[in-house]
Length: 468
Image: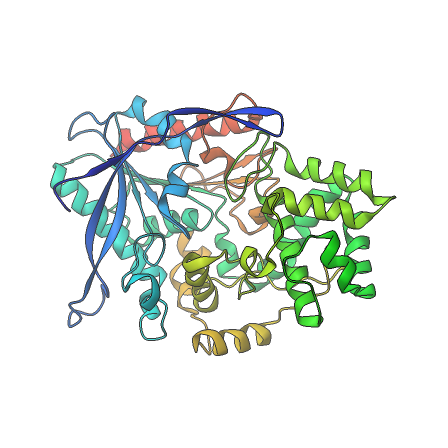
């Protein structure tokens, strides 16, 4: 660890007027530091290293007997997760906890070979779950050693980060005492049937429950049948007009990505995670679509898509959405490249859509399609099955002190752990909760269920610390 830490303070309470609603954004100052990590933890002959970023908040930390709250960073800049994991900061003062967020290798500023060379075929192969878990284990031991901490570590993670928290407890059980794995679709990685049967159906159900899934399906079918490129380009305000089938497929993926994201972050209040959206964005979307459907359904669809991507002079569908090996979306920029590679090698995403069991265009993405794409893009001809052995449910069922929380509104919940094993593995369901709502900071508009789930999580954290 470096000695000097640069402190970055984000405005502590900023009132934002958003779509005629007022939302108070609570953000927390952090100290940025870098850990020197081995590029390859499992090859003693490889002596290459890189700098991995961590964010620290020690204002509540008491003594060496006070715990560490550790966030297992996932697919993005770690500041994004720092600013959207308020639960950790809500409870840290009570436990006098030191808060540490670790950035995932190959994301954000933690690029082993820099922003360009990290993603060449020669260099990207050091991006793997096992390397990431070793990174996290060494960060924890380094921080504890430097500060002479004798207390337990509680890990937190949401989505893929929640998977990493569970895997960290499984792989290095002595490193963390317990973990909150929120919205962690761990079944998706070990069972293809989970990937292909639930995700887009769950997205569709979210909009069906608000009464507009059939209208969306009808409108998208009309677009795919008519193929009126000029009308589509004009109605959706595209920067580059559509001219062919390839452009239409990109457009349909862009549309699908918008509805997937809206369903995932269907929070009861305005939020900026994954896009600036109003409260209950699924209901808001259906209100717009239902209002416009009888007049001009394209207009309703266009308004909803712009709600996510922003009200711009025009939409560049190639910059706002990048087609990749994950049909649920990879993101853009270097973070999108990293996730695309991981989705080719270890984290197989849902299959395509079919317009029958879901409301989207018929856009299949079979295992052969995936293999062909990954071979051409990353020279990856097969994906790892090792994680199915290493991190499968038989292994997870043998570990302890993990909470798997899932929101019933979250499209990913079908791939989560929805059962408990006594007090070892605890499943908590957030009724009315979207993607890892329980990890977000408390809000007056929170449903009662998430408040209760957070109390349960706090109870178990206290129990784990006491038992250390």
